Amino acid sequence: MFGLIGHLTSLEHAQSVAKELGYPEYADQGLEFWCMAPPQIVDTITVTSLTGQIIQGKYVESCFLPEMLASHRFKAATRKIINAMTHAQKHGINITALGGFSSIIFEKFNLQQIKQIRNVTLELKRFTTGNTHTAYIICRQVEQASQQMGIDLSQATVAICGATGDIGSAVCRWLDARTDVAELLLVARDQERLQDLQTDLGRGKILSLDQALPLADIVVWVASMPKGVEIDSTTLKHPCLMIDGGYPKNLATQIQHPGVSVLNGGIVEHSLDIDWRIMHIVNMNIPSRQLFACFAESMLLEFEQWYTNFSWGRNQITLENMDKIGQVSVKHGFQPLLL
Ligand code: NDP
Image (cartoon, rainbow, N blue to C red):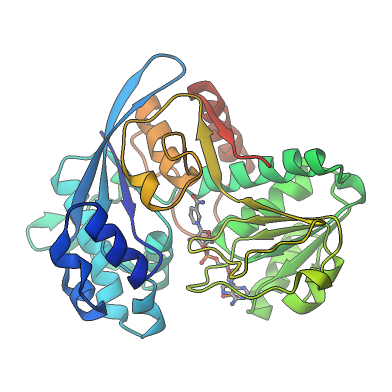
């Protein structure tokens, strides 16, 4: 059995989804209520692989909302993640993906120190961030969507916003080692970590977002932002490929310019319909087949019975593990979402 720990993108989103999923008592409640709400299993899932293998899973709604971070309710935020993990383990789930902000909160607040929750000893082997598969899928999206747009990587400048993050650093390493990309622009706030990354890669220009955007043929957005940023599309190159891998989205604006193509980053499409309800609530275009790559990672680990925290910690994703998860992703019928 696999598990997915997820959360919604805002209080407004949570209220509308609560109504839709049949939890009217949650629908009119404010942030304080969501801070108190316990985790819930709100969906059971059946996935069939291209190989014919069938697996079962459960979706655990953590009731975390990004507003909890924005309003400094850090205790509530960390409690949401730990309680959701405990809930998953208590329900006998072998391998659970920590979706969206769950793994970011786990790392940022050092939650590995908390091992005992009431009568449950958390077994971290049962959890994965899903970031190896997400990074792999984003790299495939860079390679394939650039081709769709006629952008030649060997001539292209790629800006990675969130370059020093877990996913961003893996994307940088892959693009450096596995492609002939002409230039990498490294964007984040902490200058020391940017310099360390630049030293590790032996290349890349450190720039601010405002400096990087007008120079980039491709922008990969993998910054952990509770709210998206506004982008003026006239300042971008045309053509420009924007791959938004953030959850919530890093781009606040719907960019409508004929020269700019925006692709949902870190999203896979399965070759067969998945029996579930949850992808309707996060507005996937084809909810029965499209999903976050991190969720797909826990499905892949269940298919292969690799009951281990395949993706864990920060900035430890290797190219070998990206290859390994990429191979089973193809084998079981997942493809990167393209334009
Ligand atoms: P990390 O916390 O490891 O990294 C975040 C990166 O963003 C860091 O480089 C950080 O550097 C940078 N950053 C944060 N805020 C800003 C800002 N305001 N401006 C510029 N850079 C910023 O996160 P992950 O790599 O784990 O996740 C990245 C994103 O991907 C998140 O939005 C997450 O929800 C999403 N995600 C999507 C998945 C999918 O399946 N599609 C799966 C997992 C995650 P600094 O702090 O120095 O600025």
